[in-house]
Length: 386
Image 1 (cartoon, rainbow, N blue to C red):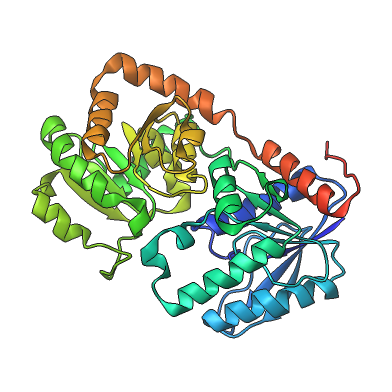
Image 2 (image 1 turned 120 degrees about the horizontal axis):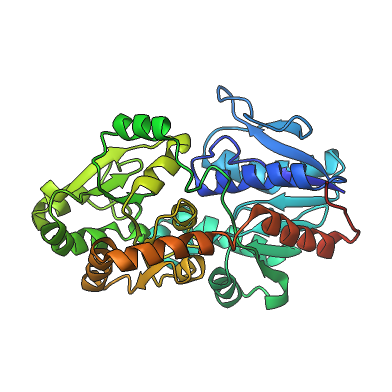
């Protein structure tokens, strides 16, 4: 069987859709013997060629214009045309941006409905029009794949897609996320980011739905309780502008009087992330809306327990390997953080449970369940490699 995959995010592995696309292709190519894969890559003038493509995966480059309109034209016209040209049996769009019409059976992965559910993300006319377009395209796809059962319920409830046309397929992490330490590497990475002996980590985005302000408010209790020996490390690209989508975090930190307890370290290279996770005392992930919450699973795989929220899928991901609190309850968040750091027996128990919970997720399971969807919309059987 021949799969054509929309590779819009292929060269952006630092965002969720890019990570998903690359991992999906890597493991499909590695585990499935009779599957052909062609990446339909939107080639914008002056931008890099597709990077890190497995040798047996084909690439069809499609010249596209830069900007949002070029992206829409690629999604709606050029991608389905290219699928027909390469004679693929199935088209798969691994993010919420499928064409309204497809010449071949179409699967679309809708990771979450955050842009639809958060009012601040749909205030502009452009955002509302795009939401309407991709909502209609999801309803017209042969099948929708999503990352969790919470996300599946949202898709059924808000998009009106029939329940039988939506499949929840959990994500997974690569083998680099593990408890296995390399003392020389770990020491070098920790020095690179000037990290202290003890720290509590947040690593992710800073959009409004990530709920960083509640975490900072919780730190007005955690900071004085744990002191400067256990700072909150904020990792990831710091917002350069202030808007309804990106609050003024520095001003809020100053207003709360917690400057001495909080430290920004900025962008973290993908290769360095496992080191930061496994050396943290705790990982905090206060998000309100997540289709899955991959950073939480990355931390668990590194043996680090998690304090998160009951927002959407997150309880599915962490199981009993951490705490999930109300995303609006800063006191509960603070209490969970303090307990997870200071109570030795609890810390040891959560560390053990973290590894057990992470072991429930694997790319082998993700691929097997994705192949069931491919079979369902196109028929036929395939055999695994090895």
